[in-house]
Image 1 (cartoon, rainbow, N blue to C red):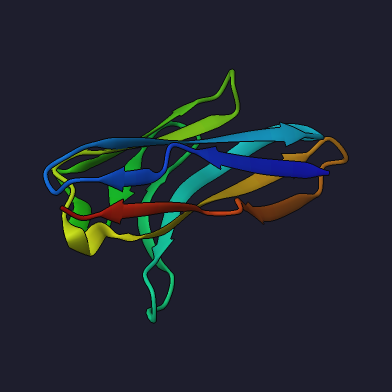
Image 2 (tube, rainbow, N blue to C red):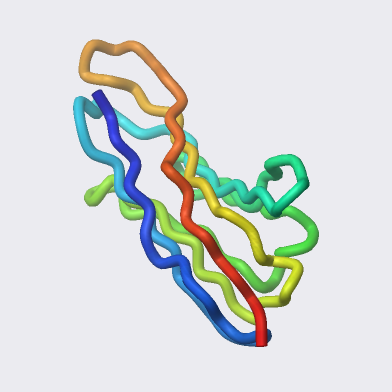
Length: 120
């Protein structure tokens, strides 16, 4: 019923920037909270940043001040601007969305993941 499609990952040198996008489509009535998670090789998935429907944000300590989460409600899209990237930011990044469907049920959806590699 709903798809989350991510884009924007890739290979970047330390200190560089990337912008991830995640667009939701399908039987959407309203998107509530949106978030980005990441999972590095051999590690558990962790929250990177989250944004509420009214735009309140919170960030994991390792990315605070370097990453910015934002959303475009008209496009059902969430973004993650990543600056001053470090090798330890290397991971698969997943978007996450709490969505009210048109039938008024609520589900949490995940994107397919996009690889971010920070290396010289």
